[in-house]
Amino acid sequence: MITTIRHHDYLMEALASPVEAAAYLNSVAEDGKIEYLLKALRNVVEAQGGVGALAKKTKLSRTTLYKTLSATGNPEVATLDAILAVYGIRIGFFAVATR
Image (tube, rainbow, N blue to C red; front, side, top):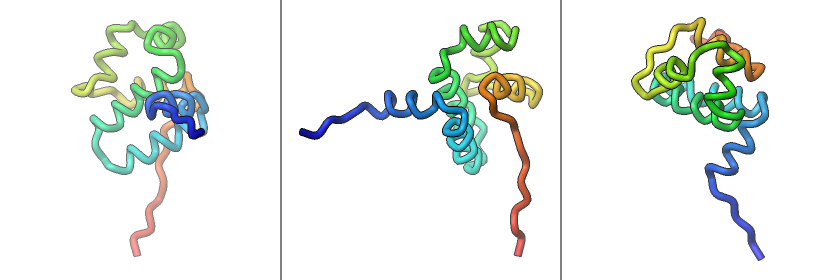
């Protein structure tokens, strides 16, 4: 018998790992669309315990976090850095071969 798992459940399980979450965010960031990156970050937040847990760890209000992570959010780099640091992830820049 073949067992199945819902995609969302699989994603939440995978994103509980900082290594998987970082790889997921990097792959989404390659698209260059902030709304996709914010959605991906919302998925990571959900997988790691939700906005309430994040608010306690970052000392940011839930309202601020919901606005920051919304589809129309415009987060500052410092805010993104604070959120990612909670999950053991950091923002990075990498050289791209130009030839």
